[in-house]
Image 1: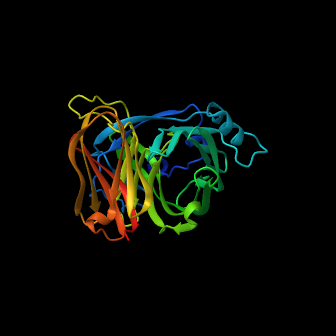
Image 2: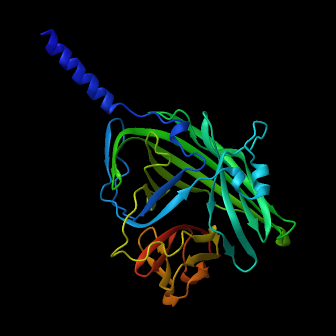
Image 3: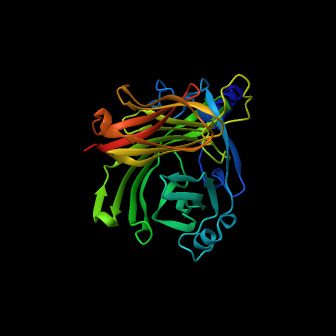
Length: 370
């Protein structure tokens, strides 16, 4: 009898250990010199993001990748020398960073060119946060520090922890371009579940973090002595984190009303046989300004000639065409979108691009068309 009870106890103990929740700490997040391959998933509005809680089972094995990329984290000292001074990894530096990621450069119209774009992060035992960013604007390095910092995660992450933090930054170009741009952001994180996640990459023990991000942008135009406060924009980030995985095994972003805008998951190398050209944007598509008033500019980059059309998609599925399908050469392209042309009402929309029969969506908030 004792042996039977002993076996039952061991069985229950083993089951509990297998199903026990993960705890995420600094070691489980990225570090300098880490490299990760991720797949960008095909948008599927039918995905269920509401199911969560303890011992949850998330099955996203049906995800289909449309493109892949490699995310690399570098040491802050490997960036622009001016940036590495501002974000030097030193105990006495309030804006210290110990890693950075690079983004593709782009142009805003014919007057502003941005190159050498970096995001700076600090991974510590207390938190993982973004401390700032840097870009070379018209040939001049411009470091931008967050005040306060954007605390992406506070450690330890475990079910059912909840935290929130404010952050923001300002870009002062009044002396050169007569512009002053400010961003205020609030992030609320809730570890709302733990269990098993299955993606095309495999099955893993995970925590799910639901982040609600509210961002408000404002701009001051010196030549017009005009300041504008754009409506606050709410987005949701659902991230499944596993021990030792570095980046989320799966991240799904939505608008404030729940429309899925992006799916990214950690993955292995896939063959592209039978698949349309992978990532014709070279990872760069930008809508500016966002929120928009009267007009918006769409900037994008093609690696090869492609058939391209551009439109606006409403939350109700209505489509407004701004550029009929046509062949465009490789390189950078910029399209001006007259939002008043189609009598669009203020609200949440998507810029819809179809490139070689593949659809790409970018969220766009229209605050006014008058």
